[in-house]
Image 1 (cartoon, rainbow, N blue to C red):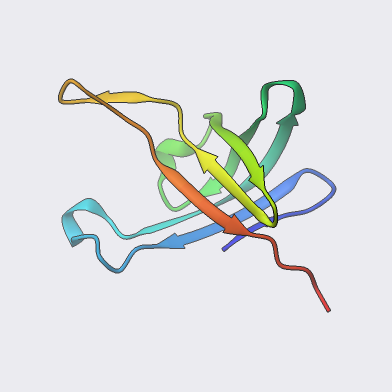
Image 2: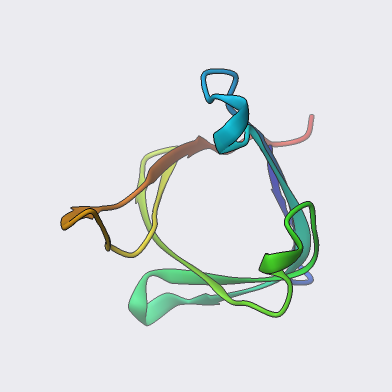
Length: 96
């Protein structure tokens, strides 16, 4: 679950039951975010996190909107000489 508010704060909790314990299966953090419209990115700045190495970092995500979906992509990195990126697709929920 990802929550963004209009004051620039966010909270995220992610879990993947298919991951093995040695690779971790839980991500949780909260902090502030900034949207850079002309670059189609947002930047998360964690203020608290389950992984303390995230504190003091800026996390960049590219975003594209497709109808009610938002597709977030990580910057391309190399793993064992192969370019990789992670994509997460979210559907916006509104309160009733």
